[in-house]
Amino acid sequence: QEYTGIKMEIVEWSPEAKTAIADKIGGRKVFLVAATLRPETMYGQTNCFVGTSIKYGVFAANDKEAYVCTLRAARNMAFQGTFDVRGQINQLTEIEGSKIVGSKIAAPFSVYPEVYVLPMENVLATKGTGVVTSVPSDSPDDYATLMDLRKKAEYYKIDPSWASFDPVPVLRTPTYGDMTAPALVKKLKINSQKDKTQLAEAKEIAYKEGFYSGIMVVGEFSGEPVQEAKNKVRASMIEKGFAFAYAEPEGLVISRSA
Ligand code: ZZB
Image (cartoon, rainbow, N blue to C red):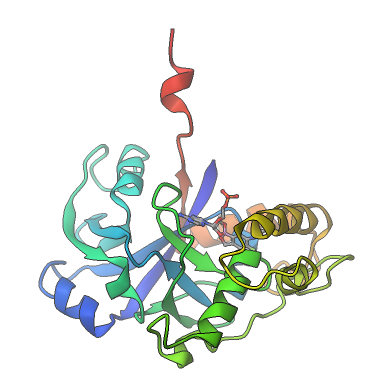
């Protein structure tokens, strides 16, 4: 899988994270790195998600920057030349997802320049970087989770203001308009992030609709088909230093047998 790693700089750590990280990062700028397959939707980021029980590492990319992601992802990055010494990992410290929640981060290209880190139950530690940037207009999982958080802020131990950024239109499709994810969540009667089967179906539909029939309604490539805008947005983010290529070596070992 060819992902795009989105660099979301920490603007303000949550108090718990601040204590845990404090003197361990050597003056580096710290970024959460989210792996996405939809770089063209970054205009609509409203927050970012972590798994509360996932352990994240803070890895030095070089003398000036450090990345927050799973160890698994850092290993992949090391071998893809993301860090200054290829093949080598320099872990500065470790932190639990629950402690990162509530931190304020920069969301590159988003109409909301700064957003918050929120908890999501379905974040997989085994996929991407373990950090998920949230685009509730076009990702059913993100929309369902954001609605859960708004309904039960106390249960999820968040300040309601962190989940107050509304979805914004990013692309339009003939069938679902400019709010594909909310439309699908309603249509498939999805009540929460726990409805995994329907969410998987909604995701499949949203991917296909967006890619094959979507037209951008925001940003530099507004008016262009998603199929064309996708790589242009990605290239633009990489050129500006907001993103980098991140690949997931699926089934590598098995395919090498014999
Ligand atoms: C922003 C975004 C906007 C995404 C969208 C999707 C959509 P896939 O196809 O199953 O590989 N993701 C990334 N890492 C994780 C993780 N560790 N746990 C759970 N979810 C994760 O899924 C890739 C997508 O799943 C990624 O792209 C990311 O969310 C999320 F409008 O980034 B995406 C219809 C989907 N729309």
